[in-house]
Amino acid sequence: MNSNKPLAVISGFGGINSSGRSSNFLGYKNLVFESLKEKEQLEVLQDLAVLQGKIETVGSSWETVSGDSINLKEYLLENNSSIRSDCFVRKIDKEVYDPDGIILDQIKASAAGQLPKGFDPASYYPARQHPKALQMTIFGMSDAIGQLGFKWEEVQELIKPDEVSVFSGAAIGQLDSFGFGGLMQSRIKGSRASSKNLPLGLVEMSADFINAYVLGNVGRTGHIVGACATFLYNLQMGKEAIESGNSKVAIVGAAEAPITPEITDGFFAMSALSDDKRMLELQASNGESIEGGPIQTKACRPFGNNAGMVLGESSQFVILMEDSLAIELGADVYGSVTSVHSHSDGHKSSISGPGVGNYITMAKCAADAEKNIGIKSLRRNTFVHAHGTGTPANRVTESHILNEIANTFGIKNWPVTAIKSYLGHSMAPASGDQLITSLGTWNKGIIPGIHSTEILADDVYSKHLDILLENKTEELNFYKGCFLNAKGFGGNNASAFILSPDETKIKLQSLFSKNKYNQYLNKVGSTQKKSYKYNTSCLKGDYQVTYKFNENVLNGEKDIEISRKGMKLKGFKKQIKF
Image 1 (cartoon, helix red, strand yellow):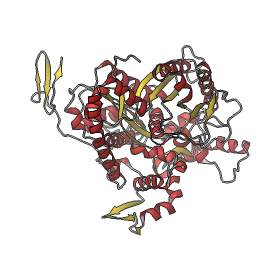
Image 2 (spheres, one colour):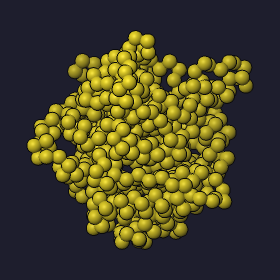
Image 3 (cartoon, helix red, strand yellow):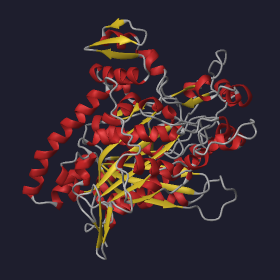
């Protein structure tokens, strides 16, 4: 890494997926639940039960949704199983996702990584017929701001209006009834399309919603669609925006809600889906019972004998800051983005077939990691979040890539996990799920194992890999970096190397004077307290969702002052310089 470039520091994160809410590492903690102490297990259960609408506060007491008074701890312990069974990959909720029975009765694919049962992001703000992924964008971005630990206005006061970038969107688009789905189905069903169907269905609309209704941002905006690698494509743009000096803050994210009949049917037609027929055949070949039907919780089995992928939904965001701004604000440090590479496959025999691009992205990231933390730490103190879709093709091709890179760099037993076994494949945000989970590993020291796979398949390359089938625990500061990997249809490959919080702080200490860094340390305690206060409120159902519709709208005729050297905008402390 060029030391003259600013460091892209991860200063905040948030979101929602099938494991729960992302801030305070809660969704991650749900993945490693069995490895936690009871106090943290109770916190996870409380957050989920509130999200699911099972319990609520009444004054200083707690009640079930039916109005029965409860002892909170006793309720959570007694209902542990039912609370957590309403998360992760599970049987599709027909009323929510498939009211016409197309997925369950015609396609017969009953598993998906759905948001916690009972959670409705539209209920926390005036959704006005927004597609679900955009509802999740509003909730997820609000969650990231809450975890940030200070108000967005405090950030805006220190930077120019055009020094914020937002890169976020979907890979497939908004295909529910409020987006492109409604647009395409309206005439067939004998109705008319809504004026919102087309614009709100666009893939980049997640970034637009953040700019218009959350941040009031006038800076750079964009979204690179790269199939399953989309989040990392956006992360690469965010990193480069910070390093170039064009942005002091970069919001990076993605949101997708792909559990619709049309998208499910598309993956079914490609023979990529773990449908009921394939699940039952797999269960029989593995010697598992088929009397109870498909085992939906094991529908996705990365690197094992498997049948295909399952869809999931997710909305994940990270807030990147230029190192000097993070120091000045007293932002908490959750890591830093030191390397992101994206490459295509060259000539292909089929658009969905694998190629060489992912070898390039992983090799470049490994080489960058060696420069950043040294060969010894690369070999001993890093781990990998594999793309791990659960398809037979992926288990062979990705394991070969990772095994070859490990062999090349002298890594003897590289820890590898694949969290789609819990969450399903969320398409655009898939690597966002990985990144948020890696931040959790640095917080607790635990890498979640691949719970659905009991034995590696015979054709998996693993000589130099430790493909984790159980949770792996180390000291908190053991892992100095993490690799994220994504392989997408069409030859969209991307990999990233994320530096740990401790290693990031070491870099920050080398970049700033002792006095400046000590001033930062005095500020960061306040930031952490405010972040903790936000999460304490969320545990009671107060999510502080930000949705500023028709607020502080700037008018070009009266709210701007233009000169040949710059522009002043009403409501912003600093001016844009030309």
